[in-house]
Amino acid sequence: MSDFIISIDQGTTSSRAVLFSAEGNILVIAQTEFPQYFPEQGWVEHDPIEILNSTYAVMDDIFNCDELKNGRVVGIGITNQRETSVVWDKKTGIPIYNAIVWQDKRTTGVCEELKNRGLDEYTKLTTGLLIDPYFSGTKVAWILDHVDGARERAIKGELCFGTIDSWLLYNLTNKEVHATDFSNASRTMMFDITSLKWDEKMLSFLRVPIEILPKVFPSSCVFGHYKSIDFGEIPIASIMGDQQSALFGQGCFTAGSAKNTYGTGCFMLMNTGTEIPSSTSGLLNTIAWQINGVTTYALEGSVFIAGSALQWLRDGLSILEDVELSSEIAERESSLNPDSSVIVVPYFAGIGSPYWDMYARGAIYGLTRDSGRESIIRATLESLAFQSQDVLQAMQEDSGISIFKLQVDGGASANDYLMQFQANILGVEVERPVNLESTAAGVAYMAAITLGYLTIDDISNLNQAEELFKPSKSIEWRMRKTKIWNDAVKRTVTNL
Ligand code: ADP
Image 1 (cartoon, helix red, strand yellow):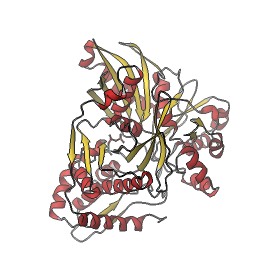
Image 2 (cartoon, helix red, strand yellow):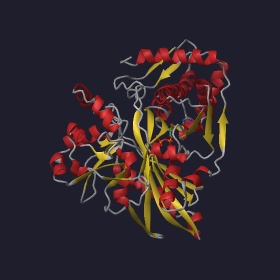
Image 3 (cartoon, protein in one colour):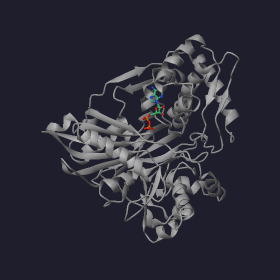
Image 4 (spheres, protein in one colour):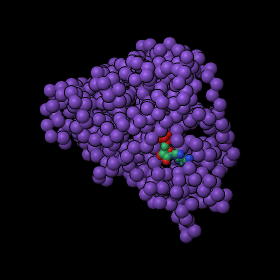
């Protein structure tokens, strides 16, 4: 009889459940996409029930897989799209509004007001974040302001707020547990990352009643139990936001180690140990995880539009049949036109790190008469690497640490052209694990730690096969390309 751990990875575009052996090896992946809703310009919503049903569907696939015929599930870990906010009725568990997704910009005006009141510095010092619609705080307030009677019910303690981890936990525990972990709480703009408590001042600035907030626990602990048909009560033994989980899954346990995830957005995180370095370059301080009372922090650069720019080529412009074809197309186009100066700046929803401009919008520059669909596909792909370069540079400046190798993961990191271009533009090696499921792995490893199956040392010694992309271009090439990108950014960002 073998022991297994299920990792639930609830992402922005799909839900996954992944089966790991208790020793940390990946065995089976189940995945399903769910609908995205864009009710108005700049608004992005998910239906929390659809999120839940897609999660149950992939969990069922895993529970019914052959590998479990001679085994048992001993633990569950949850990792999730962060900041996305749900408010639901405490008794019935019914959401009072759709989930407002991290990409949603409807609270730009409220953020502007908070900035005008001079709250930038307090927010940064307390929460580690910059005032932006990206984070949960203003999204929760919006729901309370726009759903009839919600604010009064919130004050009376009849409603619950949660990020997606809390929403799943509450449902998986049969409405018994309303909680979150430190890494998710640190993305709400309501949590003091030093005292590790909800911050009353931030709550009053945002007008969010404390009664609706979840309890906050370490990332490594038993949050509650899921009653399964075949395996009885299974402990939910870890929770981490997706980016922190990927940092953990990539084995970035020591200060100075960093990873970049290329998913819907692009997120670069560097472990800063127990320190919270101040950032002058538009990076965020965030809680990576807490294990055995020790809190580990990270510096984070967030790029809002990355893989989703490829989806835009596919679904919006209809010039790309399948995102996976973009590597081959870009490769061909770059061998035909090595000196193309077409630049796509995909700031469709403003720009996060390092400029934090809520008002910037996307643009295409450098078109010539012979530019075609392939030039735009290639430039869009390259924009993921350029944006990552901007973040990496900021990270090196803030931390004083030079990064010689970038560890990568996420859906779009499967793209060979992108990875080679990234290595070339940075002039550093890019290391891609053969198993790209670092996000799912993070909480599986963490659950294994909670349940006593693994230690951090065991995880460091797990044999992970990797592919290496080495820089193959001259410094002059890098400088020329970077200059063309920087010029395009200057023309696009409104606050430069
Ligand atoms: P998330 O967890 O944010 O939902 P994933 O890590 O699953 O994201 O990655 C999905 C994203 O990666 C999508 O935006 C998709 O367009 C992009 N993507 C997937 N495969 C490729 C590929 N081969 N080349 C470029 N982009 C890709």
